[in-house]
Image (cartoon, rainbow over all chains, first blue to last red; front, side, top):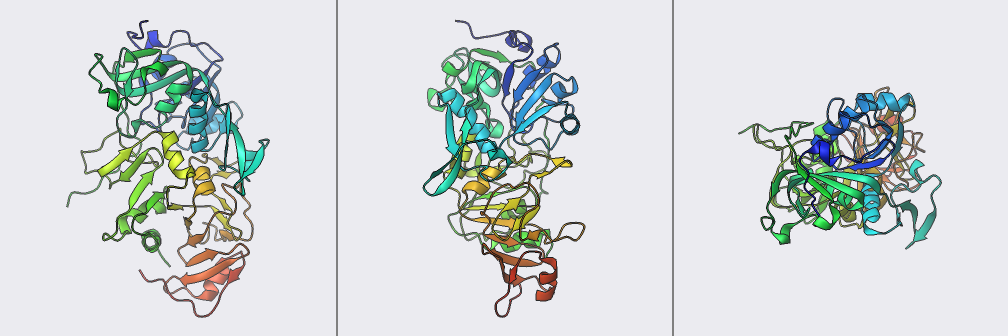
Length: 232
Length: 217
């Protein structure tokens, strides 16, 4: 089976309006920017997007918000996006905010075949509303369900034709758990390498989780908060 | 009154050798600058790094190396990088000894609110709910009052909660407080701030026993 696709446009074929997508990344770090740009070029809309953040106004998922392609957003932190806030407060965009650790574990569980789990995060808050509460070791926990997606789109540093992936730095973040939870997982990589070039001991995402892979045409890798110190 | 850096400096005195520490956005981030250098402490950032170092030198920023505040950082020798589920396994599994975070409100029963102002501001909880639900040792770093001068140290929180009964200690620009469950015990006061000043700025029940020493930095 060939997993290699020529570019983002071909790799996203089959994504349809109304589908649920997972998109890796934390802030703008490790987001599948080529795939997002390709989606912004289509008429696909009514998407449910699961991603820790929603990009900024003119980059990352912010592009799909500007073009009104997203109907519902499932995220943990959305503070950097004014258009997001506007659409949410006006009711145009449905938003489900969930604790970051629960979001990561819900994706992992979805990929690992665990339908639900109990966590203490969110007990006694709005997040717990309507959820089963059970006590373990004297402490209350809430039941959180697994998340899966029609397509998961992740970004890695290097990958091969088997779909094996290696991430770089904190660009790893949600990508490995989302790669596990897609019915179809698309990986965009900076470098598509020959089998054998990735040391199997250091593969982060085994190829079994990845159905499509392509080398991104270009990576802007925008920095959200450039912070530096003076040389002394 | 303490400034932001001095609040961080006072909190840094609580950090012990061998601890893994998660610092939230804002004043908590500054704590790393004041930890004694004769002890070994590792900073965790929940986006997936242990052994976080200082900001990079100008020109050495790496878009693939950021902290939870999306700021560019460095990794110290011996650092480790991991995915978000593993990161929160460390947090939820109580492998992190101290969490320092900011707040909009803290109540005398240990409740904390810091993620939402209904109808006004909704940024999301990020990792805060996971952190406060599981950490054994939570210190809140914040100003004693808000911009309007209203107390943030309350009998009961009024904003949507981030976590219940979890805060152990609060360090503000005016005081160091221990959360008792039915009140705040005044442990230390900022230089030049009287017990009466603190009493006036505290809406929750303040417990004052004996002489209250000044904060020493």
